[in-house]
Length: 395
Image (cartoon, rainbow, N blue to C red; front, side, top):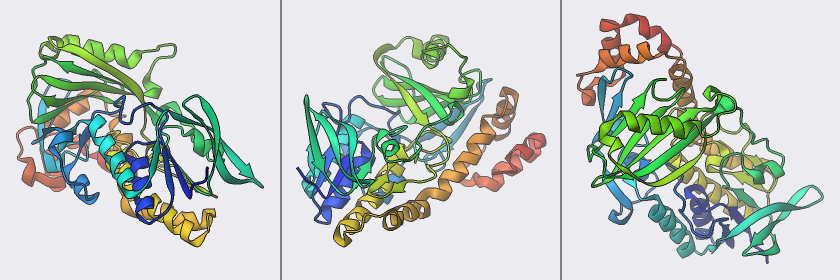
């Protein structure tokens, strides 16, 4: 078998790359190692409305579980700061049904002409004279070789495909969040607000989230910075999440329907996201927001950019790192600055103690955040807790 482009991983980034390349008339194969696309769910399922608009994706009721008005931030002493949806970040707007959403993106790739194969795990690269010339795949129990001049790696955190191509995708503990999440039923939560619990009393170097899913269902999850997890403590994130739920009666009465876990990169993007015959997208390229861990929108945007450049590479028959660097320049222009700013925010927040979070919440509680803006936030801090301003000087 031979294809112009092979995309490894059918998440939002991979499906978007496959669709964009197929729309340009290239012969595309999209591979997914699991037997069904979109399952198991790997995130809190929040996405911003403005982000979807940038991706030119029209909201569809079949993959929207809830529409959010905004977010509420809880400090360690449970002071609450309310943010409007427009100020709450890229993860607030809609709570998705990711299993349906991801399959819709894959269906869009198929409609554009991409072939899709599930239950197909890439086991290695085929190289000739040091260049990628194909991939080895274990597909439904059968080992096969697939020829291609261009591979798009969308195979998630610490991408094996990129590593086989010579790109270091390993992560240090301080650059990774360990996450656990329950889908729960029978919980009491506001139907149109996401909730974030911030402070080391909830999660060392991370936060707890509650995302409504309609009725009495909600995603209740936690992210813990890897470097803050005690050595020899497997399942640490889940234990903290269980403790949080037990301490909050409106969540404790709920029933756990599903448990997922995984790692999320919260650091700078890959230093190099291209090589000869290869581009890296989505979580594999560390295009997640370092402050929040959200990556759906950047995954889609980066995937589309990679698909477009990939089609150009096929047309020009030029698969060199130099040519494919057009993709790297494009994603940096589109959202690179945003990722770097978020990294600065994350580095500040993980070093704040709980009294500082309480002081910030005390300063901001009660303000109208539709009009407040950054200068208003600074004025509010200056008025009540001027000592906290210096921690934000680097942002």
